[in-house]
Image (cartoon, rainbow, N blue to C red; front, side):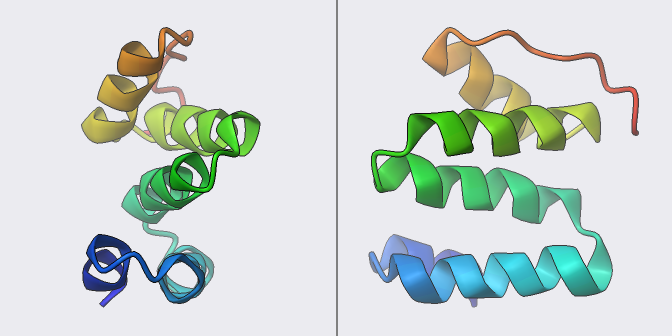
Length: 79
């Protein structure tokens, strides 16, 4: 659901879905997806913070996002 909302540009709905996925399932991929929502909103600081936390859980896509943005990539110390 969240990814389809994101692809459709419905950022509020996507963010709610990803937030619920993180809070209920502790799915670290949801952190990366929330970062994408923040980035699409032009909120780079929050995007980077979410990508960095997801990368600490070992989410490869978050690591790739950080590299694309030229941001430091943390060690996956929570994985």
